[in-house]
Length: 369
Image (tube, rainbow, N blue to C red; front, side, top):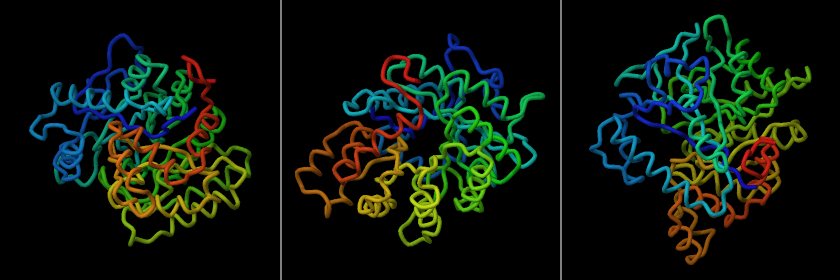
């Protein structure tokens, strides 16, 4: 079974359908924007990256936030997600709001703001999307480890998500403000291990959302925490997004090198992996070329796309013949194109099928083993 472990959900002003039960901690939607289950911040909407993303996706750059824009986004998603002949499932990702160190939620970031949320997608919204197509979509949750709801902490909220069939948890520390060695983060990791829920954690560079806490860019503190938890017998499965690569080829690759060495070395028999998502995007293709030439690392890699990040073909002209490049460019679905590109580059087939075992997903309409 081929599963994309890294597929984003995002709308400018969306509410979940009322027919699907809401998670108790999301009764009012976003904390920072009550009544909504997804939003883009004014800061994000003003970034050049957002303008380019809309151009690449064929979305009218003149559309304002609201139903008109969100209906187009939904149609674009369906276009790409319905034409994936080689892909069995997508893990659709919720994305929690920014929390400060005290656990206070800071809502949508205004233009020029230093801190705040650029993207929010509730677990309830993603749950409703998965319920509509359980044969295609899997619930990827997101709970900030500093989040509290009344007298309940993030660990108890994770237990509620686990009971609803959540297959992984997504964190982006440099945007959401997550210090991995904070006691709340460590407690969450212990709970994830107990519940058997992997985490998909982004380390390395970031181009789409605000880089608010670059002090959390390196995966080295994560490795230290995992060593401690492993010694306790409480280490969760962790997938590091983008193999902790920097945004540009000329930037320091310390995190990438340390993660690769740890995955194939001291964590070779443990649940530490990395996904290859977004590595066919502008500025990151050099890392995909390097990883393709590192077959000893493939056994620790998991396939993902980071949709809606674009998939470039021309940077690989030295590795692929003209006919193959032409065939890849003709594939309308970026998800399918990413799959076939990485297969053409020679990644081991286990890269594409490993997620089913990691996530405990079985074939059939229910999806989760």
